[in-house]
Length: 225
Image: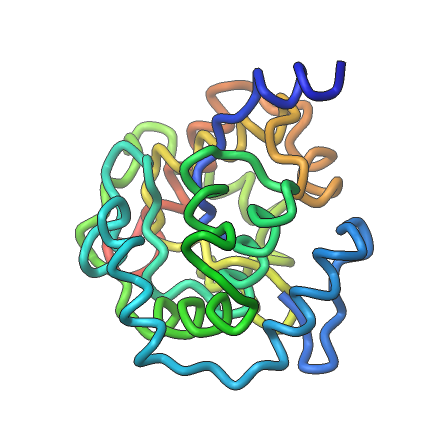
């Protein structure tokens, strides 16, 4: 029954969106995922090898990791190193679902924990693109209020996130990706998403979610709300 349920909900993209140096690995993760993440965060990354590995990622994410307007896939350039490492480990451990990413993050492409660390460090050094596609202007004011009340305390005033706390950068992300992650959280398609996210948005209307995603997409280098 679980396998059928899991198969029917494999639609989330990479998220793009870790822990202190004595890593506070999320307690909800499996023991295997916790150990691999800890090892990846403690490894000394080789960004030249990360650049080589990224050639596979670039086929979808783009040569500069800018993503696509459709949000399939998201922008990952400039995302926090530890955040990227966590998401890759989650795909490897089956704690985040999306078939292409499960294959790319798996051992046939990223053959070791060291390679997870290498590619995460390389992507984190890339400059975020200002050419992402923001959401509709009409919902931005509503989204700004919602963000200030429910998201800012963790993701930061400008959506900058926090590498040490495993909080992703959401500023300037592709709008469609942000909206889909909010929807996937509500519909149980993001098993690695912290439960606090569901509590914060579970009573939001579709219009409110669109506004929130639109506001976040307009933070950062692309544009100001």
